Length: 420
Image (tube, rainbow, N blue to C red; front, side, top):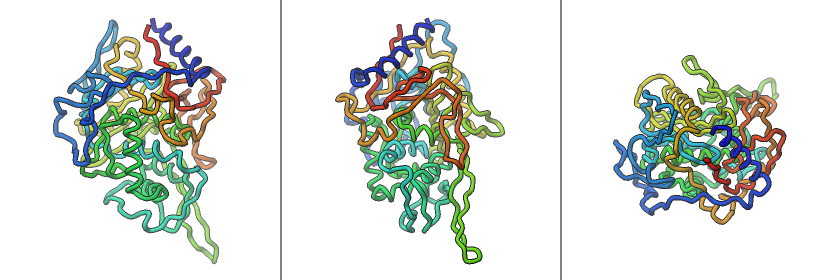
């Protein structure tokens, strides 16, 4: 049975490469107007009895949702997160979930939505000189990459600061380039609605705690899946370390500007004293604030299958707990993927119904070559070292794991993989 499903998965990818425009659309579960949180919506202390049913009725039910088949391993017992979800990045099938639509504070995982919204708007080589107004309004205690007033940075530099160091200073500069924080918040909320991430309400583009700022494990997974269709997004998300421009200094009448190393704070990517780098990990984004606790969305590939896992706010107060629980859910997902019935699905964007792009300029890096060789997914320029080497290619939500093939990413939605 496993061989048949693997063959159908590769066949789907091959068919997609031949005729993207012919790909049918996954049926989206109807979303009620009440499913979109109002600006006054705040996280609840316990999961509501009724939550959004976008992606399927069972995803709107509180508690753990899973349908184990013959030979399927049981879910790990030591998962303490308030909300989590495991989904197949290719088919969109949700393998298991726990309070998937519980609206909670997202912390810096919300920066995935910022990136998915703004990445197509600026060329990575574009330069910007930072004004004092660009850095206004950054929350007290925010994570910073070290952006300085009156210094010039490329868009590439700023995105490295966002993904690696979760720098709210870099977020505010990019927002200023986009017309300001208010405009960026509007753009992010509009894009979230286009993606059908209807649990999400953006108040601050950096994910800093704010009244009414919420998302859900389901929405963050949708957002990550959309972002991973962009080559630049994949590269930044999987970069382990890079050089970031320092401050200009004047010495002996000469101005010089050095750089300093920044490292990714995603511990499944870099490892830590009590966490090993996860095999096949390729991003995506972590977060931590007082209201949100620890949050994380990750993507990993193993044996031709790519899974997305989002974990929000583990109750167990242990160092790196969010990564440990994510790793356990990944382990379960890779073992159980062909032995469970899906409890829901990741819905396509609204624009997929007409074959339209989910956002203007989404194909900023249209031609991507993928192979099954162990090559770095990302590189942070000549001064940075590459990311984890996996054969990951999420093209419009579908893997193209055919050696030597070249695919054009037109952001059409994928063929649903057969389960027979």
